Image (cartoon, rainbow, N blue to C red):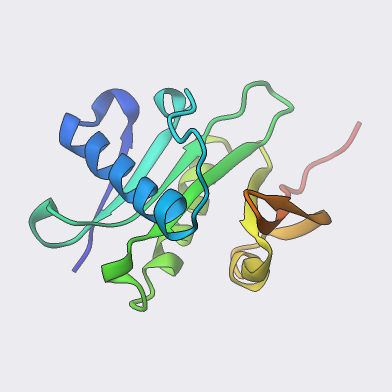
Length: 155
């Protein structure tokens, strides 16, 4: 049983922040061998979705939603992870479903964007994301820009 929690940064406890940063470091920096600055100054303006295992001790899944910076900008979904001990249980599907729903609830007039690993195009495609542009390398891993475009009138 996973306990899902949405929080703005100001609502996160010190333990929440520690758990998030540890999970992101474990997955992106250690497992994927991608040294980069994870503390990028974006977390403070983002919404954070955490999926907690038993008694809110184990962070099972996580992502953040980065709000648009202008009326024309996109909403970005990033840092999408399922931690190692919880993989294979379908949490990624629930995580993305919740992310799309919350993004559209908070920012109904904005397109959604994510930079996904190229081999996960079908996974993200199941939530309405479509690839745009060419595959590119990010930290030595093939990625592609994917968008969920909102239907709206163009001027």
